[in-house]
Amino acid sequence: MLGVIIGLVAIVIGAGAFLRGGTPAAGPRIVRILGGRLVGSVLIAIGGFMLLSTSFVLVDANSVGHLKRIYAFNELPEGRIIALEGEKGPQAEILGPGFHFIPLVRVLYDFEEWEVVTIPEGYYGQLTALDGSAMPSGMFMAPAIPDAEVGEMLKAESFLTLSGLRGPQETVLKPGQYRLNRYLFDVRLDENTAATIIPAGHVGVVKSNVSQPGINCVEEEVSASTASREALTVPLVPRGCVGIWKDPLFPGAYYLNRQAYEVTLVDTRVQTWEYKGGYTKRIIDLSVDQQGNIQQNERSVQEGVPEDAADRAVFVKVEGWDIPLELRALVQVDPDNAPVVVGSVGGLGEIENRILTPAIRSIVRNVAGASIRVQDKNPDGTLADPPSFTVRPTRVLDLIENRDALEQTIEQQIKVEGNKAGVDIREIRLGEPAIPPELLVSRLRVQLADQLSTAYERETDAQQKRIETEQARSTADEQPRLVEAQIAVQVANQREQERAALGRAERQYLEELARGQRAQVDVLGQDRVALLQALEKLLTSLERKPELVGLVGKLVPNTVVGGDGAGLAGAAALLGASIGGQSPAAGAIRPQGQ
Image (cartoon, rainbow, N blue to C red):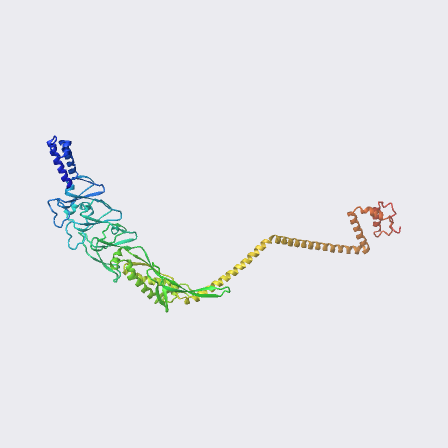
């Protein structure tokens, strides 16, 4: 305002000086020096610039210009805070980026710049209208504006003229940038305005606090199971109505106003509930000393409850013994039953703690501590064919030997309770029971004795095989000598057979010779046979050594043989003559008696 006054004064003085022209006789010293026209022009220019500077504004590219009128003839209507017709107060019109000329804008208005509203990805902007029509009774939030009309309704003039409601808006600002009149709309953006993300394997059950116009909102009693009258039942409504929606939201991102909608995530994947720990386990360990005697030692182990367990182990009483029994349950919620689960108890955790865990503990105790249906067996231990079954009281060892039968019975009964709560029990599996070791030690001792016996037999077989292996190795090492010995034995046997054959031949020869000699003796007489044998030996020797002939010739003289010619005297004389180199005519050879 001061600038306008100074500008007007400067224009008036400058105009007067310019119109009078020349050098005035009186006036300020500066006027006398510079002259009237020049001073007038300068003052007019200064005054004009000062007036123009109050009539334009520059808006930054990332800002929104807001005007608040100070001087006006009309006041705002009662209950309104935004001016539509130029009244005093915040104006509905906003200024975009760039240069804006408005006469005396800086005189008549206060000018403010607000940053463009930026909504990042994964969040939404919570809107609250500070002006507008009064909200009807019973409504705490203005209904959502259709997406096609949101852009127009975010303009202050349109919102106020089209009966936009004052107060919290169900409509939210999705990710992006918006130029809003911040005098009209308050925007909230924080961690509580994050988008609703429904991950894979889950559904979102919506509890709505608002309803959309034009929807027939009629509650419907929906049951978790049509097969049981005791199943959980809850009233559900169609989507867009106040209450729990019958149809859940499937995986995805949803920009839902958290003030209008409460979304409960329900895990539709298979869940594992474990009941384990919370007891002291007694154990008897068996060992074998160096002499082969079985010894036993008792110890205790404290089994704690894991952090991720649904509950501690179930204690069952069988044959008077309190036995901790661990088990695992596989459960799953059908997406269609998720609204019933949320509407009846609040969620899967509440189903587990309030309904199914007590039911599981009760059923396991009743089944394991009462009777069991087992398949009959033949005397040799094989199952009877065709199958037949017997129901009898449960025994402690059935927790190990007939675990399948107990699991089937427990699973059938628990499935019924799960269906009532809208939960599908997929499987029940019993863990290793903590049976008192006194009931198992005799069996363990028999098993250990059998194992020791088997080990002894195997060791004996191993020793025997080792001996055979050593013998085979030694035999292999001595193989060359064994071969030599075998060959020597074969040679000796061959020689023995050869000598036996020669002996037999010699004996036969001698026997034949003896028979010949006896025949010769019978014909010639004993003396002549002896002489012939000697003569034969002599001839043989001379044949072998001819050099003896000369020697014999020198030693044997010419002999006159006499006789009757009936013996061998003539032959001997001829032999001697031959040796001596004489012909028979040389000597007198004549028979005796001639």
